[in-house]
Image (cartoon, rainbow, N blue to C red; front, side, top):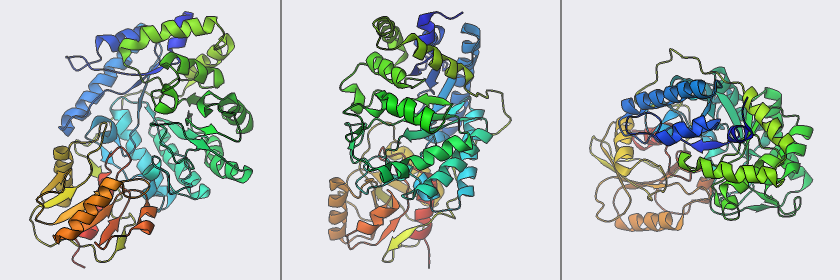
Amino acid sequence: MMSTRQRLARLLLVRSSMGTHGGPSDATIAALQAGVGAFHGPPLRASASSEAVRASRRFNNHLHEQAREATGVEVLIGANAETGLAYTTGAGGTDVPYPAALGQLDPVMSRSAGRAVGLDLRACGYNWCFQPVADVRATPRDPVIGVRAFGTDPSTVAAHMREYGLGLQEAGILATVKHLPGHGDADVDSHLGLPVVLRSESEWSRHLLPFAEAVRAGLGAMMTAHLRFGDESNGTVSTFDPRICTELLRNDLGFTGLLVSDSLRMAAVSKQHSPAEAALLAINAGCDVANVKCPPELVPSVLDEMEHGLLDGTVTEERVREAFGRVLAAPLDVDSTTHEVLTDALPLLSEELAVGTVGEPRLPAGTGPITVVMAESSGEAPTASALGFRLSRIVGRPVQVRHETSALTGPTVIVSYGQAGPTAWEAEAIAGIERSGIPAVVFLAGPPDTLDHYWADLPAVAVPALDVFGMPSLSGFSAAFQVLLSDT
């Protein structure tokens, strides 16, 4: 019989950390023993792909074993895996295109992509994936959903989202449809601030269509968005609003699966609330898992504050019991698998991807080196050397990635991955390279509609290949370079 504190812990999704031995750290094991029910997978950004695959499998399997010993209940281990296993581990697995590229193909391709990602994740001990994206990209000013959306048409998004999610679940992975009730009409990145969105009744229908399809398809989990609807909720963030998380999702759409909040570390909520406050508000609104994403060392203090919140009525006992029951009922498949995970990322579907062009985007023939210039990204994106190594493998020529434009001489590709079009830095870099006269091509690696607003004289190629965090889809890069190095 679990205590009240352990039941609260079961509703938390926290970060895991690695010990010196390569297994879960003492703090991670302590969080598990305290009752925590869900973890973000191991913090691997290894450059050695074979080691990343082995390390993730070893770490996650150890965590599963410890969970069975500590509580007798399986633990959820989740991954973003936006472009495959390497998005989470840093290397290894099958690389799949971003949804914005998949959305231009037959939905059956999205089924294949989801299944490939799911098989890799399951073989490495994951059982939960924070995919697929159901957001309908409704404004070109969208700075964050970008290439992660399957498109701008709700029916197209719904079809691809459904197939991708079913592909994941065929592989034994719990799929998570995000971001309820749709983030694609926001023009503020919720990682940085709180978007305020106004919607008409018809616009609500447009954004909810993919989520209704997810319910019909039987996809097992959903994730909230941190938005404020100025016409609907009087300033309440959607993740904390029972009208979104309960009335809309449960009563109107009929969803019975697991609802997890988006990261409560995002500025849209963290500027106003502590992790425990945000967790209690999310759970009381109808979330079953609060994605606090804190280090495991902070779990005791978070649980202290949550217990106090339960006593003072911030969250009800009934809501905790209901969420606890849904977490325990989550459909998990943690059986071992014989699937062999690739040690190097293999691009999938790159031959089929649509590539837009302006002018004649060709690089000089030969075997000489190519310089790729792109803005330095924050977070966990690959280093310049790691990305250059991977691009060299798929291009068949030496590729050097740089974050500045001085002293360029040979063939150069200037990459723009602004999700709402080239950023100020990217525009300045394009203009400078244009003036230099060196052989150069612009690669628009954001959403397809950025090509519609391209202004420079340099030839350009466009295919979704980088998200706002600078995380690459090698499938997208491969498709672009097939055009850049073509003889025709």
